[in-house]
Amino acid sequence: MKSVVIIGAGLGGLTSGALLAKAGYHVTVLEQHTQVGGCATTYPRAPHFRAEVGLHMMNSPFEEDTLHDVLASLGVFEVIEFVEVPEFFSLHYEGGSFTMPFGVDEAIEAMQEAFPQERDAIAQMFADFATIEEALNGLGKLSWQDIFKAFGYIRTILRHYKRDAQSYIDDLFDDPMLKKMLFANVAYYHDKPQELSLLYFVMAQYSFIKYGGYFIKGGSQVLSNYLASIIEAHGGEVRTKTLVTAIDVQNTKATLVRAKHKGNTLSFQADWVLSNASPHDVYGTLLPRDYYDTSIDKLQNSISLLTIYLGFTVNLKTHYGTRPYTIGIAVPKCDDALLSRDFGFTDYAQIESGLCGEHHSVGTISMVGYIQEWEHLDEATYEATKQKVLAHTLEKLDAYYPDIARYVAFADVGTPRTMRRYLHTPHGEVYGFAPTPMQVARRFSFHSKTVKNLRFVGAWSFGGGFSPAIMSGYNSIKDLVKKLS
Image (cartoon, rainbow, N blue to C red; front, top):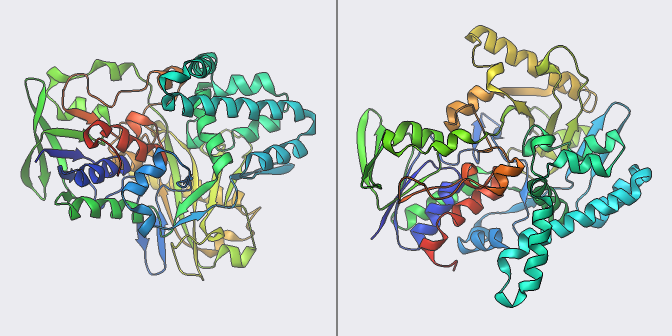
């Protein structure tokens, strides 16, 4: 039986592990945290709450595509409930608001009603989005008889692959508020629309608008735990609190993975090694220096996030009535960069999230974060700055949820320092490499260039987010599992 050692138990690693275990490989997953999941985790706050670490919504798992096939092959739909989210997002700004519905026709109608002067440009944008989506999704499915259609798809991709999202939107629209609305949730992907690949932006946004968004009932930990259980049910092993310290290599092949657990040194023989850890950690720390891949030094990393996890003594939907599931709040600029940053608030009470009882609720505030704003602060200043950001965001949220601060039962502020500690990424990055036009066109390979039997899964290989992480788990090892059953 071939042995596979997986470094890191994020969704990518767990998906790979579950597929490989079912295919007959002996799988060992090594995770430094106390629980599996990476960003796909929850944590309890007694006595009523479970905080969701990373999942706001994911792409529809019910379309006839590879994501659906992967989940179906693992029996996910038989044990996990997906809850539909009511709308994509709602942006609130000084003087107005706009809610982006799901459904292409519904989105076009809502946008044209809100921005009638941009009616034709809105129609053109959605036509372009549909053409790009068809090309990106369709190219890999064509047979040799479809050569002319393939040329059309390639022509579409070549026309747009160098473009950034900002320049495309600027060329199409004049209304500044419409432009701001279209990038209301840009922090799901990157911090700067002018650096964000148009192809990446279209695939993500259009997929959500066309097919809807979903939440995992009970939180993302439910999926992570289930994938781990598949590995164990097929004779594999999932070890938490186990920090990988080295990968031994002989003749360009990884042979042994070394780790520490509660002060003990462990070693695991490997025919294949999959890394859910960052390439910087693998090449910079775990592998012998001779196997360093210098190409990673030329790539731009993605952003980190600042996330505030909140529990409330009331059910926000019952207390305030129906609100958008995710509100984007445009914040007026000031001299303090941390207090000038737009943020989003996800109100899990608006759906049957399963994160707490009916008389309480949880929510999450999220914004772009940068490690340089936090890493040099002493502990007292660090804690004071977290409290400053918390007070500021609750004050802004008060306009939509009056007196919301009085109902806060707990508030945990996670900074880029927090992300770095739990994810072991260089600066707390949550999306792997930045999705710039050139980096999306030349995506970091699943396969190591220097170690023959080392592969990468997760955000660093396929892009950030829940669905991409799952897809990376399949794409990185699909030649090893032959086909999905």
